[in-house]
Length: 67
Image (cartoon, rainbow, N blue to C red; front, side, top):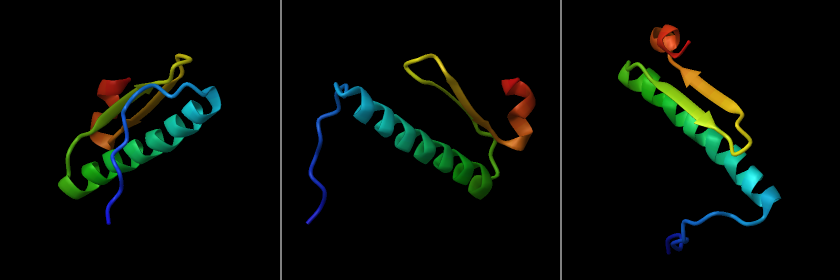
C-alpha cells in the first residue's frame, strides 16, 4: 500500500506553509549536495522565501559564479 496522492496547491495556513517550506527546502539542499558529491557535478541552488529571504547552496567549484 503506497502513499496517497495529494493536490499541489498553496497552503492557506501561514504556520503550516512555513513549516512545509523549511522541511522541503532542507530536503532540496540535501539532494543538491548528494548530486554534487555522487556525480562530481557543479550545482548551484537559489531559493527565495515568500518574505524575500535568500537561501543558497553551491558546490565548491561554482561558488564564485553564485557570488
